[in-house]
Length: 367
Image (cartoon, rainbow, N blue to C red; front, top):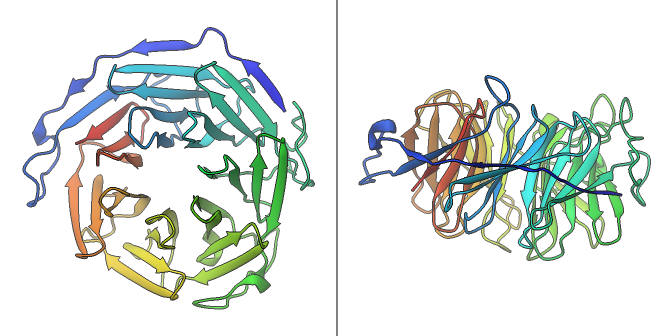
């Protein structure tokens, strides 16, 4: 474990500019959409590989900037952007998650590390993921870099325990970091653990790795859900029993890009299928899969988020520069056209939608 106090953090106070209402196409069921946007500091003509996370209230929006090797925070109420340099050079941060304590966790893709930012103290702590170890982490040791790197691509934080779960794409594992004890536990995704909708064959580790790309934690149960990209499956890990269950998505063309959990404890998993242009939902308790066609053809849906206040599901349509909203009970899909291509999306408790554009030039809020 390595802890550094970050000095000289860069603070930008930016006055937001209010875009015209005509900047988006207003759906028939909406009277108006209010748009505000904040420019992000840029070191070149564009930033890259952004991911968003936020406090549930939406008071703070955090993002990663892979090009400049920084973690950023937008406070909409004060129009302030703060950025922190990541201690490890060229770490390539690619995923980020917020914990109710105010701490922010992120993955350093190039350095095989999990990082934690404590904004109140401007402190960043790093843990190295050991690809050949399931018992602990190395203090300030980058020994996982190179051919043995786990290439973690996504993480999620259990809001109840503070434990951090992450995907080890190259080693076909789910990992758990316990920050208080600096320990890590790993579970291998095994083909013989599959059950449910379709008992498929998770044909091995290595070249046939499932390359999981997204995961989420149900803090009410402690269960962890994840996507197996290469095998078109959604998996569930129960850490208490060390049990992994898998469900295969039956489709002629399946490319699951993102997932989101429904209401806590309900075991409803929403996902976007980019190839078949659908939004899907799995109910593991009944093995029931429901899918909705997206009205815009070839929209290539990517990011998906669940609104816990309303039960609506929001998603990005990457090819059509659109944000979509699914009402699962009414099966109605509403779409908003955007003036630029979106990259990632967040929804806060007030129902406001935040997204970041694909060039990383600004964060936009739709009220």
